[in-house]
Amino acid sequence: MSRSTLNITDTIENYIWQVGVRETTVMQQCREETAAMPNANMQIAPEQGQFLALLAQLTGAKRIIEVGTFTGYSALWMASVLPEDGELIACDISDEYTAKAEHYWQQAEISSKISLKIQPATESLAELLTVGQSGQFDMLFIDADKTGYQDYYEQGLQLLRQGGLMAFDNTLWSGSVAEPSEDPDTVALQQFNRHVHGDQRVDMGLLPIGDGLTLVRKK
Image (cartoon, rainbow, N blue to C red; front, side, top):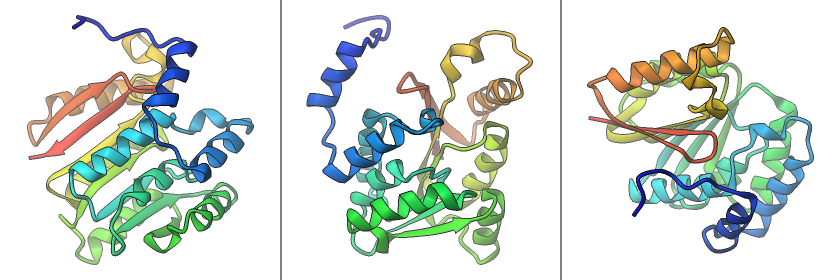
């Protein structure tokens, strides 16, 4: 046992990928091709993808919402473990990036499980609430604009069933959330983290996975 989290060196990270992650060929292609892009830091790590897939399995998820799809890597992980009649609603604003995502989804033969919505995610989530989808989703994964996290959180709580799970990426923000800052994204994450910590409607935990992953369970 240890009182603190292990410092993840490149050597340890590679070891985790070798023995702790069951990445398919399509997932690996998506990850590696995305890694060559200028904004590759928008993609989650393989161990996060594995963890999200495991969370979906543990919660028995059939319906998932993703806010922030990028090139489709995280959706590949989650949709791959959904049942045949499962659904993942992917919300993004970029036709360019999600065109790459759709290519990988088709290669992985999971595109039938994924519905892509290209518009601001708050609008997509509001539309779902309007058509009576409150309490109808098992899981949400949010990895999008940090200043929007508070809105996604409140809409997500309405869409989530009791006992359902939300996961928010980048909540440690390379450690900058622990220091005073005037950066809008950092300030937004600091406020979001404090809000979730004090919200008695949920159970929560902030884990040092990737750039920080906050898990929220609706009571």
